[in-house]
Image 1 (cartoon, rainbow, N blue to C red):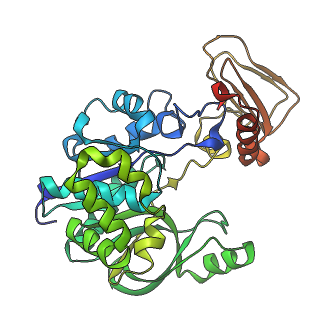
Image 2 (image 1 turned 90 degrees about the vertical axis):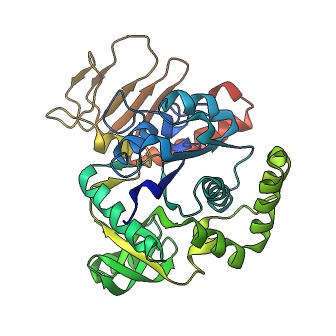
Length: 356
């Protein structure tokens, strides 16, 4: 990149993370929790730390919810408070990104921007930074770029990116974005070697994104212009913006879209199964807190988040997730870990706001 001082990051940190109930709550969502093996580092803090070689905290902007502003600020003391963008309501990623880009443009019209999720795990952090630098170089050349992950299994929970021609080593034109496939189609994608997982990372010149939004999402462009003209009206205008992802609103329609292949130990930390995969384990595959007892037990994940210091003991059970938060206790088979969202739905239906 010609000028590293004009590189900025937007971290999207407004998600709810319902798949991590009971640890994740409305006021303490997934990105504010240490769910990737380091008990002292929330996922959001790890995201900001690992990009520091390219983007120091003073050039990081974080898009979050108004109700999460104080907790986000406490998690990121090195990020200036003025760069925490509090959305009045969630409106998906296109309004989030569009608003953040305009805020950065006011500071630096020549900005190069990396947009990253706040809640992923990266094993090879040096490799990750190298791939981000490659994607930013593609963006510097005029492309709207993304990073695709080399698939390791026929995953039906991710969107895919179909590769076009290779334009430089490891960088390809995007032929098309593909919705989440069924298992048979996903297996074909993995075998064919021409599809990557869509990891939700985007890289562009600020001007390229604002121009693309103006061309492909004129209603959003007009709404963002109104916020620019009257920032005090954010709470009134933002809820009226179209709720649409940047993928559907821009990436699938724009020309000159590039994808850089990344293989750096990526995990989207999508639920308790992912947390077990990333955790340190004993010889029997149990991930346990200090003081827990496991007898004839295998493949279990135990999280003691309640601060009660009571002993958790497992005997003769396998492949369970056990999460104790003091006010709630979850016991669920690991293979059904995604079903915790049904618990959140049931709690909402029962009006138990203190528990979701």
